[in-house]
Length: 492
Image 1 (cartoon, one colour):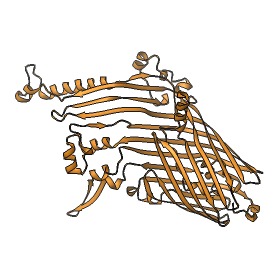
Image 2 (cartoon, helix red, strand yellow; image 1 turned 90 degrees about the horizontal axis):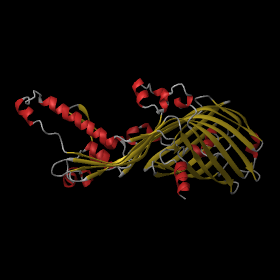
Image 3 (tube, helix red, strand yellow; image 1 turned 180 degrees about the horizontal axis):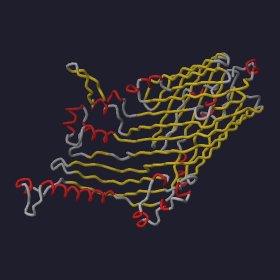
Image 4 (cartoon, helix red, strand yellow; image 1 turned 120 degrees about the vertical axis):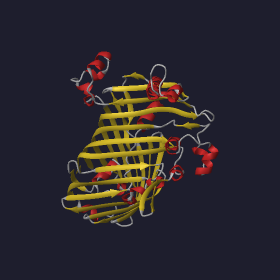
């Protein structure tokens, strides 16, 4: 049971984030919609994505606060100033918050129909980043640790930012970054007189870089009387970087003969081809009637095994107490002590000793063991009602795991198709605590060239007032629209 649970956590990708593409889901005339559901079959019999520009995706979200919550603009005596609104930003945060970002570039994307079958291939460069942080961390940065809870209540309207005599919880804070290349083969087929469609996309994943904060347990306590600081906790971090990024010195090679970076001519040491993973996308659609369709999909169910230059850092139950720097009063009063040292010399020496003590306390155990990470599994459940062949309304329920937090999303959309020349979608999307997202998707054809631009949040044109930024655009070559499909009785 433990092994099964561990595998489920890995496949769910607790330390990665998957792209949203809420508005894209019901834009079937755009070939890239099949990335949201492997059962979707594009209109064109053949499509070829323009290399490098067929599909470019960028998304970012911050669950904590908007930029305008933190920074205020004011004019004083004709002078334009920026002012930090500390309670405005902290008041928007939860105890645990998340900043995430993703970039995807489709280097190769092509597909074609053969009867009731559809086959497609893609090579995509993908990069994912997430930063999990606590409200206490930002309160320490913005307010400091010199206020009692009562003083924090008086100044900021909340006692949560007073750490004098209290403990700040920084546990769960961590950075996760993954860069990999995806090689996918998609196959879908229709059954039951085209009522049922099922699809699968197995994928080979080639990892390039990974930084995984697997665990952080960290607290900071400030003594109410002496202001002495006490920190305790532990952490576990895994990394895998190509050795070509580093130039090891002769000393490091002599002192660390077992370090895998020592063999710079070994292709496995460089990291190329060492970090192999596998993934799969699954999808289905079913026509309940001539006008009503339901669909479901699971995407990015998979993992990457990091064997190229793995490095693991593990620190458990460390304890650090800092009571300040003292012991050079004579130097301050008399310019120097009996040994001729000035206050600056003594202070520098004591700071160096303190630095050595801190480094010794924080120094982790270092190993070189391979490890495994998920790539961010996500599910989609959709329903669409087509009241004409050119117009439909749809709903989409989506969910994913990001940094051990479940992030649900909902999309309501209206879709319009002007024959094969123009497609347009308007959507209302909610995600990650953000409820003011207007999605827009446009696709137009100058045959055989198809252009598309899609965003899940049009208001992201003003980044200061949004938590969620998304954009996708690209260009495809499409050939062979099936005119018979337009004469069928069904609206799909």
